Length: 153
Image 1 (cartoon, rainbow, N blue to C red):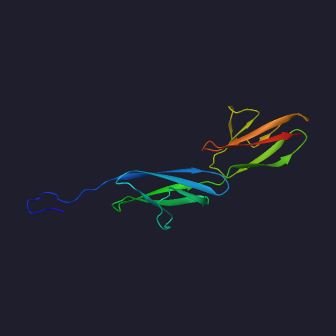
Image 2: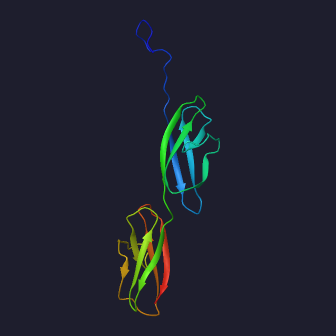
Image 3: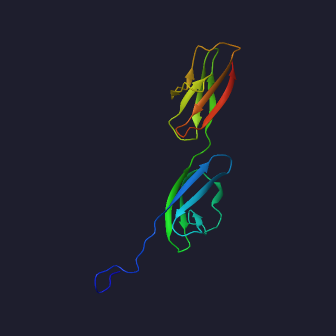
């Protein structure tokens, strides 16, 4: 707002940010951290009533809208995406091979056999395996989550 002399008066805009942290497990949760503005903060998830607690429990997979409101009623809107749990299942076995399917997490998927460092993009079929040997197959998603299965043919 300008006064007669052309100076801005009474218009101060404070910017603050919201960061969202998500952790996957049964009944996921989102923890929010407000910064800037004027504390204390209140938080709303997907249009729910504002709450003082910075954590939302039993959050389902998908994209969520988080509103952070400061003591002066300034609101910052952020989004946070929760992913389903990363999982891997065996879809086919033979005498010397095994095939997997990965679900959940965030694609693309990287797979490994008996290694935590040698990852191969989308390698779901492993051949030339020996009977009665134990193998550890792992899948890693683009968020870095890892799931593993022990297999003995």
